[in-house]
Picture 1 (cartoon, rainbow, N blue to C red):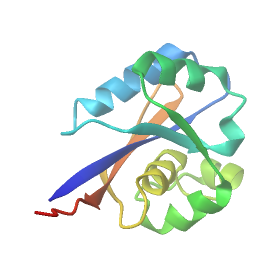
Picture 2: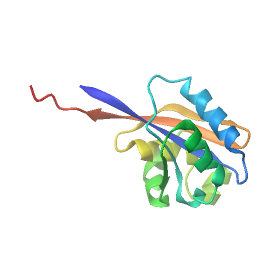
Picture 3: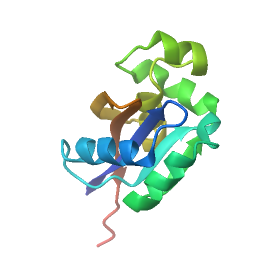
Length: 133
């Protein structure tokens, strides 16, 4: 049996309110089936308090990914932002964070959406569960 692992990738401009992140994540989750396991973003966003507040409000862990992990996932990103490429070296922070968070073999189930200086994407990977019967 295989269960999808859903990872939410988040990007945001500095100073955004946590409410903007929460609203966009909730809107994204309404567009997919399943329950996300965590929020993922770049290590450089660790000092952004709104991300921590939003994760707490949503009841999801927040994982900060190193730039190298984002770059590995960048070939599977759909969205291309010149600004994000210049800042982080990847075409889309939200998409690459979601893909890297979901792990090897991940695919986007929701390409980047954006509102109020926040971006969000959702990726899924299949987790194989062994039946030992």
